[in-house]
Image (cartoon, rainbow, N blue to C red; front, side, top):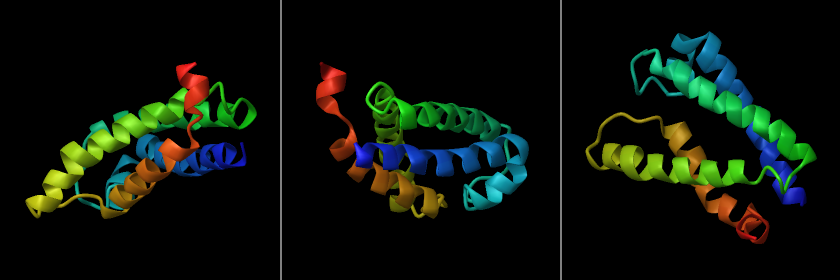
Length: 123
């Protein structure tokens, strides 16, 4: 349970910062969050909205860790998909990609399968 709550707290810190930066300061987010790998686009605000939802659900996860575990499954799915279909091809083709985000996603994809309470979710 401690590991589960720690993941939610990490989500609150990271997703909250990314959400606020992407929604309200998208040009700064292009530089900092996305390591200037992508040029500014309003799509950054869409990403901010997604991370804002993860931020809010993670706050609830601190109080209801098992009930909110599906948000972690969602994160595992989209982060691993992004790594496979965006980051990996960029690395192979030597194109720019956000290295910090890639490392964070990779760590999360390794940690989450061990933290997610699969028995609760799959019931």
